[in-house]
Image 1 (spheres, rainbow, N blue to C red):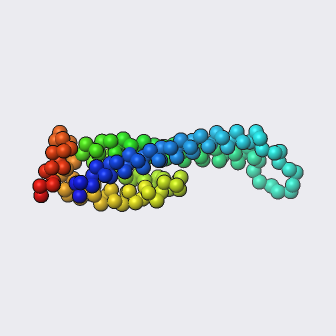
Image 2: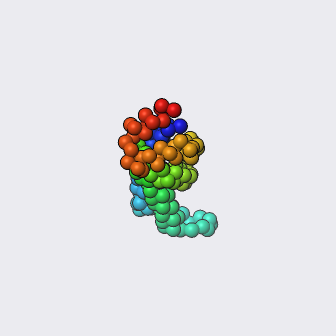
Image 3: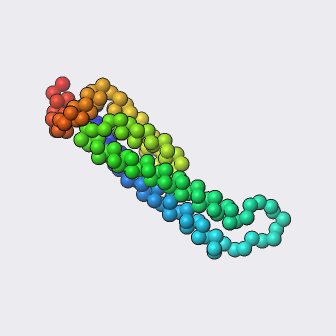
Length: 153
């Protein structure tokens, strides 16, 4: 199980980069949607009620910005945790970063890979051997020695 920790750490970094890019796209899409309001044709005088286009575009812009920020934060957390986990440090942060994959349900695109990584990562990170490996890492043992210690078993 310990040999899977660096693999999960790299996958956390890759997933975090993908989520961060998606978050940036969503954050940029919010103001872009509001800018579209300037180019939208004037509302027709049909008998349909409903909110004015200004309100709709304003709400959609805010929703996109909020989703983008949440996904961007989750991506940044995964990148940071992945870098720390490569050195067998911050196991709890790694678990929190893996669990933040549930936040990506808002963006839809990153959800399948985030859920797969979350399940695989939690199985590995909650293992007793992995717990011991992270304890050794926190004590200052170099990653190569940690791997060697568990390969001997």
